[in-house]
Each structure stands twice: as C-alpha cells, then as structure tokens.
Length: 107
View 1 (cartoon, one colour):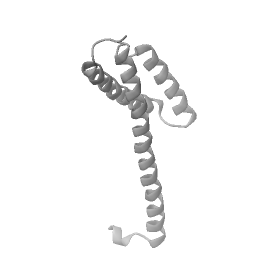
View 2 (cartoon, rainbow, N blue to C red; view 1 turned 90 degrees about the horizontal axis):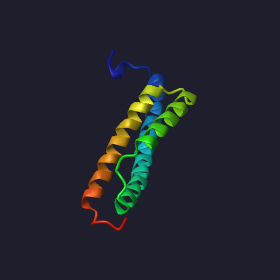
View 3 (spheres, one colour; view 1 turned 120 degrees about the vertical axis):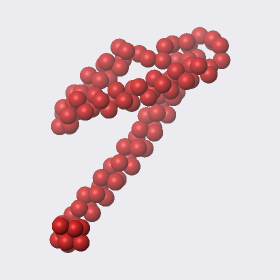
C-alpha cells in the first residue's frame, strides 16, 4: 500500500496527529532552550565561586524525582532517566567550559 492508497479519513487523522506531534516537538525544543539558559546561569555562579561543575547528590535526586514523575505520567522511567542523564552530561560539559574560561577566583 502506498500513501496514495490510504483512506482519506485515515490520512486526515494522521495529518492531525502529526501536526500535534510537531507542535509538541517545538515546545520541547523551546523548553530545553529555557532550561539551558538557567543552567548556564548556574554554571557562571559555580565558576564565580569555584564550585565543581557536577553535583552528584543533586543529580541523583533529580533522576529519582524524574523517574517518579515519569511513572505518574505513564512514561517509561528508564527512558526518562536516560534522557535526564543525557541532559545532565551536556550541562556538566557547559559548566566545565564556563569554569575553564572564568577569570581567576572571586570565590
């Protein structure tokens, strides 16, 4: 079956659902951008006060919190944890870069 052969009602429903998916994807991108703006500020604050880029205790709390949120949202907690670990790794990388480029100690 080719896409030409799909029933008109099915095509309309696919288009409607895909438009929703596209809108959600856009919202996710903008939310991630906003999140990274905040984490950049955290990185500058940490660098200014000579704090380490990573905070393993907070990361563990956040992972546990996100796993609970995922469960309540009926999302696979393991997937949510993988996503957050990916985001955390990127944040730490940003914080390391900020720390490397920070002027020597005000802290």
